[in-house]
Image 1 (cartoon, rainbow, N blue to C red):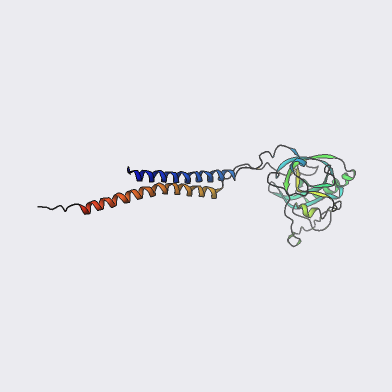
Image 2: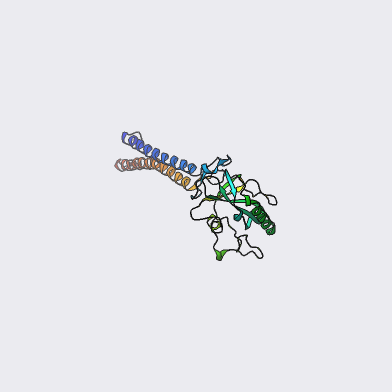
Length: 267
């Protein structure tokens, strides 16, 4: 092991092992960075116009952000959604169409409140529609969430005895693309936000929809951790390979020395 060529080989093996170790450290850093929470400021209320733009999908940095937005509700845009859970209890949402002040001719879907009773939900929706005739300006505060996927008519769950305010089957998903087809006060020139807002406060007769702060626990990327472990094994193998080469050479020299030695004779 103290021969110059094996010392040089050891230095080379250590350099290779260091390279493998560096790659393993990089994989560990990737495992943490890919699990880092993207938006940790969701509870800071921000103007919706600063968070998102109309006609755009909700990206990860925008989802669950608490926002504020001024405007007024559209009387014809109130409706009810079925099969909505609130802290595990099944029931109904009352939803609305909100015309934002800026940019003009832009609309936002809003989830106002929850109730376990269909008749109560329909009653509250009708009362809100009647009170919205004057288009009273107000400022909403709530959590901005991504739109849900629309449900095809063939997959729509029938709710016996329950019909939406706009007529037809009661929807069960908060799908912006489906809602704009039902909003009578909406034309092709109008814009709409890609997500919807769950309000912090609910109208009388409804319970506030549970919309808790998103969990921010960082989940590691186990695939990157597996790769990091592989690089550690490779680094160890580089040192082990040097050791085996040295030992094999030593054993071969010992065998050659034994073969070349004079035979020991017993007198």
